[in-house]
Length: 95
Image (tube, rainbow, N blue to C red):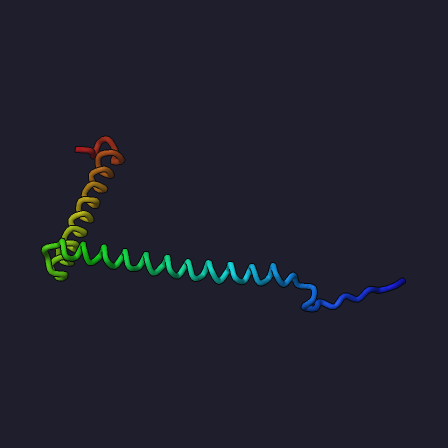
């Protein structure tokens, strides 16, 4: 029986296909970074535009948003308790 030993050498690689794949990966990386840069620029510009449009200082805006969040939480809690009391309480305790 004859054994044929194959040595994985560089001659076995399809050099043209390998170079093409590396070039495509490099080109896609460059395009991806360019897209990320454009996205970041657009996000920063829109954030600045929004901040200029708001007539409140950052501290006042934070207070307003905190107040809105507390009001929403309170309203949600009230609705939860009302639903629990009216829909799921025993019939004799529904007042």
